[in-house]
Structures are given as structure tokens and as C-alpha cells.
Image 1: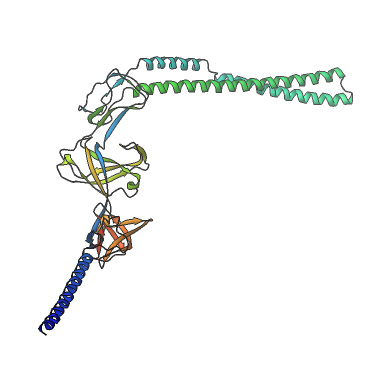
Image 2: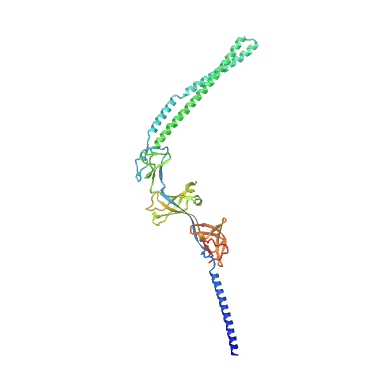
Length: 410
């Protein structure tokens, strides 16, 4: 009897233990599931949409140059005979800067002046044309008289008042006057053509003399300003190809920055835009500037990688000075192309472009929700959102590739 009671109690205990462990296992499974649920999702960096002020900026490297400068080019080329100045030397307006070899030009000038004198000496004079004109007018009068005499003789011959011999003589006199008139016309035209030809020859000879004199003048360039010799590209005795830059004179007190912006950047730059100039040579100091000139045409430039690019030269007026600035020094330039105040902003790498439209990933209930937005101006740090986003909404910064619309995130 006691054994039966003990066996029943033992069975009941075993059943309770089984139920207990089943319950424990269920709790563990639930906790694991919850833990996995809490830890699942793509890890992302987020930020808040905020209101603030923004300036759109385009950046480019440039260099300092003198805004007032004189570039000396070898227009016709030639051998440099002398360079009486050196780099760094101060020069005054009207001072000789260099001289090309003039021996060949002087010989050509002598030849051209001799050809001009010959053309002037052999030119048809106005008197010759006048004489030909007088001869023509006299021949015309004689022809008219002969014509009247012939017509009168014809009438008289019909009436039998004169003989046939008299009639023939009148007709021959008329024919002869026509021939003389034609000859006078030809002589007058020849005189006029001769005069025109000689005038053309003289004009060509004068133009040649004038051209050589100008070449001689340009072969001895003078400084057209007061400044400093900043660059000399050749030495005495060297032969310079036509069109080469030989020397540069500039005013070191009139400095500006010059940049070559990509065409896509330059379309937003306007004269008068504010600019900021910085660089290692300025010791962390930023100098204010203003866009003075945007060139109207882009130029083709090869990048360091050999890629052909369309770039637009832009000149920046410096509104402040710095003792370290020198022509030729490199600087970093930021041009402010736009500004907006108290607008919706997100970090620049929040916005993604897909099929020509702009989107952001907004975090809603631990999920990434793709939302289309309209953007305004921007810079390297911030982007303006015109609509599609509210203040303090959470957005994903630089969304990973695995993030899509509806992806769970953490």
C-alpha cells in the first residue's frame, strides 16, 4: 500500500518537473527571439533635419597675379640682341626692355624704300591723263563736224548739187574722224589704267615701308607702365619663335587671384560674388575678395590625368592684403554663389539621386522609408531642402548600399 502511494507521488513530481522545463525552454526561446528582433537591422548613421542659414560655394585652386601687367610678346620672332633689364628690377614707363636683331629688318626697309621711290618716279602724272582727255574731246568735236558735213553732202548729192567725188570725200572724212575718236578713247582709257596701276604700286610700296617700320618699332619694346620685371622667358642671343611670351612687367601692388573653374561650376558664378582666399602661404588667415571678371568663353585644358576639360577663367579682386602674397603663389579660392537664411537643412551626404530625382531615407518606426524631396542650394557640408521633409525628422547619412525602402535599420 505504501509503495503504491510513493509511486503515485513520484509520478506527479516527474510530471511537474517536465512542465517546469518546458516552461523554462519556452521563456528562453521567447527571450532569444526578442533579443534577435531587437538586434536585427542594418546599422546606419542618422542625423536630424534642422533649420539654419546656408551659403552655396564652388571651390578651386588658383594663383596670384598682378592685375596691372604688361606682357611682351615676340610678334614676328627673331634673335634677341640685348636685354638691358633683369628679373626683379624696377622699370619706368618708356624704359627699353629688350631689343631684337634689326640687321635683316633694316635691309628690308632700304629695299622697300627704294621700290617706293621707283614707283613714284615712274607713275603716270595727272598731266598725261589730262592730255589724253583733251585729245579725246578734240576728236569728238572733229567727228561731230565730219558727221554733219557728210549728212549735208548726202542731201546735196541726192539733189544733184554736188558730184559723186565730193560726196565720197565727205564720207571718207567722216569715217576717218570715227577712227580718230576711237583711238582717242583707247588712249584715254590706257592713261587712266596706267595711273590706277601706278597708284596701286605706290600704295603697296608705302604699305611695305610702313609694315617694316612697325616691325622695327616692335622689335624694341618699351615699358608702358611703372612696375617690376617679373618674368623673362629667354636669354640674349636666343632665337624666339613668333608669338612667344618674352617678358612680363607688373605692378606688385595690384594683386588679384585667377582661377580656372570647370564649366559646370562657372555657370553659377557672377561678377560681384563674394570670394574667400586661403592657403598655406596665408598662415590660416582668410582674405576676402570679389569676383571681378568671368571670361565669356571656356578653354580646353588637359588635367593632370590627361583628361580634356572645359574650364572658364575667373579673376578675383582682393579686398584685403597680406604680406606673404606674391605673384605666382598658389591659393585656394571659394566663391559664394548663393545664400539662404532660416531654411531646412540636412547634411550634404543625406540626399541621394535616382533617375534624375532627389531622395532621402527617413527613419520611421525603425525602418528606412524612401522619400522624394526638392533641394535648393548646397555646399560641401549642407544641402537645403525646399520641401518633402519636416524639421527634426531623422534621416540616414550616407545610406549603405543594402538600405532600401522598408529596410529595418538600427
